[in-house]
Amino acid sequence: MSDQSKRTKQPWPTKAVMNQIYEQHLWGGSDFDFYSGEGSHNPSIVEPYLKAVISFLKSHNNNLTVCDLGCGDFNVGKQLLKYTKSYTGIDIVEALIKRNKTKFNNKNLEFQCLDISKDQLPVADCIILRQVLQHLSNEEIQSIVENIKTYKYIILTEHIPRDSFEPNKDIISSQGNRLKYNSGVDLLRSPFDLESHDNTLMCKTILEDNKSQIVTTLLTL
Image (cartoon, rainbow, N blue to C red; front, side, top):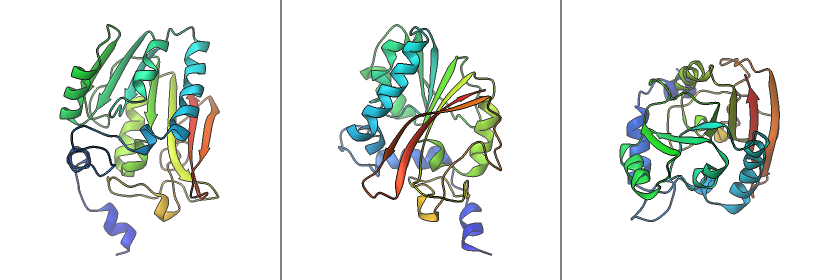
């Protein structure tokens, strides 16, 4: 059996993985609070993203209902809230959702603890999937794809190699991603084959290693 097959056949529930990441601060941050990593806090990553997404939301007169799948510590989402009609933040980590409910309060804001690969998701015009799928197995991603096909807009952000790569190599759910296998998630390619009427690049950030990039794409289903 290949190393790749061994990796993909090791069951490790995502809920347990994500709880461990936050409990042990594997993405960094203080021992006294939740921290969703550099992708949610590094200005060189966050600022271009916010500029692009806010521009999109404004183009719809701040009237879109948004569902953030994998809202994390809400450092990014809190800056998008006022440009939406309503905003629902979803995460699989119960303690994180409890913290967010205590820390962020707005009449148009709601938090729910859900497994986005299994649970029924709220109705919304637009979903945000920001650097979530890159940590998940292909089986889980496929379940999520089936769960999001009813949404009109998907704002998808993935950390991928800068140069050519083989998309969608399988991994087990973890704090890491597919970069070390020269791979990244592409929902439009096999085995996911998500059908999208229009795909628009919203922003792209080349990282300091000069070998990888964080790319945000607007998918219109």
